[in-house]
Length: 242
Image (tube, rainbow, N blue to C red; front, side, top):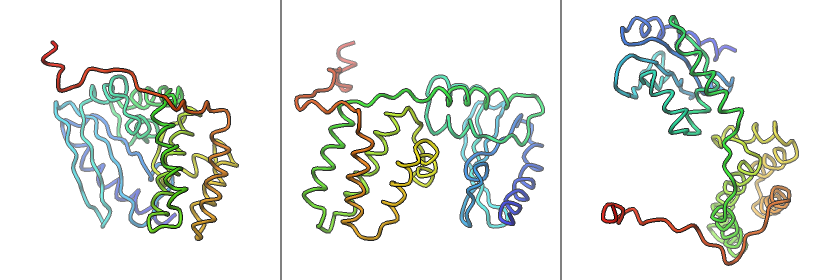
């Protein structure tokens, strides 16, 4: 609680100064502060809604706490949500906690982000996802006891979780938030993933990973050995063809 109070005090000090800037029409905070996941070295992710035409990222430090400050015009936030649809932006905006919104411009941004977040990313598992996963597990099987075994295991785990998120229509997130998200969605998968990461012995980790793969890949259509991607025009030749 003391840590949260310190961060809140820093935010208020920053807010008192920033809300007097003429171009700033709204401010919200996101990240670990909102998720109650603060640690000693956590920073503050603060977003300013402006009337300017520029985007700028700036670092600020108050009482030893770093504030990552993002300045964007109001239209850019909607562009991020409706056009770019960057999953990181969508999640950051969706959990935003409003600090300053005298004109009521920030609340609709956060509402729109939540609307998109609830729909899910709608990213389907493709052949490339499955090929990459299969390749990593075969490589891991061959080299589990080598100097690269643990590195390969982590890569295979990350790809497996990526496939799971697509399968379940979940938004990808930082690895630090992954376990909590998995537990909330599927307790068995989340607990097994946590046990795997906490396990010290490599071969025990490997066995847990294989079990996790068996659970996650249940119901997923196996990869066709003769798969291929759709044909696309080579980017280097697009101008010539146009």
